Length: 458
Image (cartoon, rainbow, N blue to C red; front, side, top):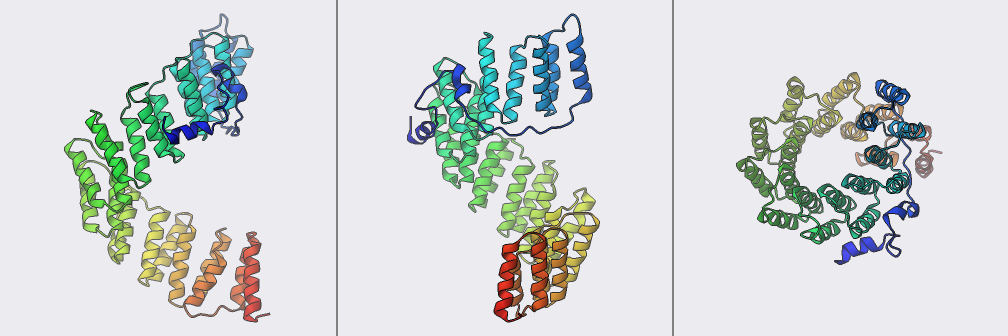
């Protein structure tokens, strides 16, 4: 076994003391995530309670169907409560209902309780199925316990348990999410041909992680290996590769992959197209971005607000703010309402070309539509107003930020004003100190007070 994966398994607290599946739960120490309490579907709970009162007792699968419906609604705590109520009433749980219980505990991060249910399953003499192991592995990975999941996998395999593609895909995904791409690749090599034949999901997960690590050459090599083994890539494989090439600036290669997808009748989705449109816009290749947008619409994929935001941002970057405005003004008519990012892009673009009054009108639009502004939106306006010497207007924006609970960085704002050749007065400092104190930023307020002393206002 190679070094990276060995290290991950070695740092597990269970590595030095191999344990059986039955005792696993008693040695685990997990942090529970408090359950989120939602109002369960009244009909489901009422029907479950009626089943408990019926004579003769209905088949166990009837209870399982209701518990499953609650799980689908993400009422995990309610499903757990009803499961316990059922058992307390004297109804013997089945493997299915116990698996549902494990699934609920895993979703709530209560993996210690989940393993207690596993012990209960073994105690009752049930033959464990793959779903039980996969659910526990997923629960461990979901809450960052990938090392424990690997240990549990090793113990399960050692006792002759055969896991499926979902189990192994979950482990590989868990490794990738914790930044252990190399270990994930080693794990793929380890299981390949011995335990299972890897599928497109496993390969794509690692390709995606390699791309995000900017190891696009390795990602493409793995893709080529996958194809050579007769495993057909899907839209997610291509999207992962396209994203990887885009973030390292190899946009032409990314466009080439899009062409390859179309030739293979693998239809790109909105995510694939948005990656490319954004990358082309960031490179200033607006004509190419519009071509991709045309292909997107020809393929029947409707552009969304992310697509149009990228296009507007691209136009603003090349100082074609009027074209960005045209996009902004037409998207709502196309059934795509602008969001806070859309407004921020336009406000920033307008301020850069000194059309601050138009930017302020957009601010009023945001207020009328009850769109919550972020710090970037406010900062763009303040910067634009300061550049035009409209300091009092800038302070009105600062006051609004305070009123809406979005305080600016005081020191950075003073520096910005000074950079424009304007010396802040005592009124300026007083406004800032008052706002900072109101939101509990006493350390920043103290820094502003020090500035007042240095400037000799006191």
